[in-house]
Image (cartoon, rainbow, N blue to C red):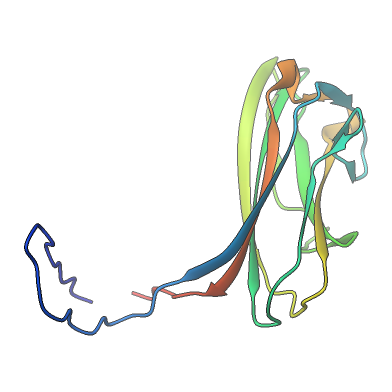
Length: 167
């Protein structure tokens, strides 16, 4: 598809031509963070929790046709050639598989790492939805999350309209 550019400097008047696409529309953005330095050692998925903070956020879609764009960023420090795996849960149910996990990060050797995962959910609901991040560690070994209080974050965006670019 050829791109057409319209330069809009000062003094432009008239009617703009019809666009060849419809753009997207975001209805709301919800954001939360967990910034409590915490150690987790678990070979099964557990809530990413530090102190009284859990990495989760709640959103109420305005329409059943809305999609929820989820993005989470994890800050972790690992050693002994270990890593971790993340899982997004909606109302305490995993969103994806195989094994309901998204990605594994880290190779250890005492380093800090930041990772970001995105996912587009189609809940077909106007009820309150809580998205929570769970983690498990390789071999149940210790991983330090939010080391030195570097925040782990979750963002939820209600997508009211979207455009799929298929080139």
